[in-house]
Image (cartoon, rainbow, N blue to C red; front, side, top):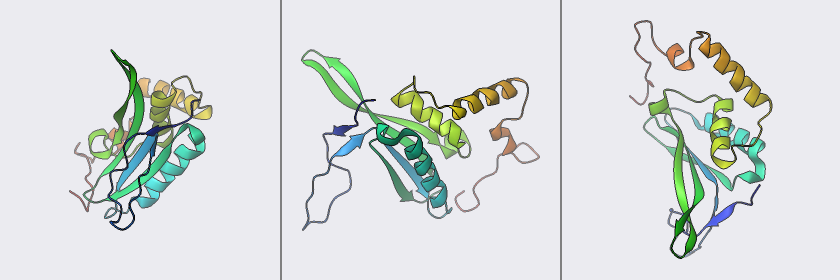
Length: 165
């Protein structure tokens, strides 16, 4: 595995005026934005722990970003080389791996690990996680109820977050 590469730009947040520090961000970087009103901090921290345990130094960093409004989004920033006339130049790509509102609910840990793996190293074997995903795909093809269907009410409507509709 390649060592995470530093991003040339300083972080987005502004440091205090009396202490100007230019920090480098290491890629690939994963951000987990979570709603504090919905009390999703433990879930976000659990996902961060699982990703760091699985991928270790293949990740540059995992950041938890508290927000409001029912948001739970996992985003990866990674470098991709773009060919130009003066040679290959790294360009930062942003990939939304999971969005609670778009994808309907929260990812299973094995699904999130698979999504991260598919971006940083598609050839990486996730061991029992890959076997569980293959087994889930087989049972889904056999007519099992998907997790998004389980989150629907009896009349077919999806449940909404109570605090952040």
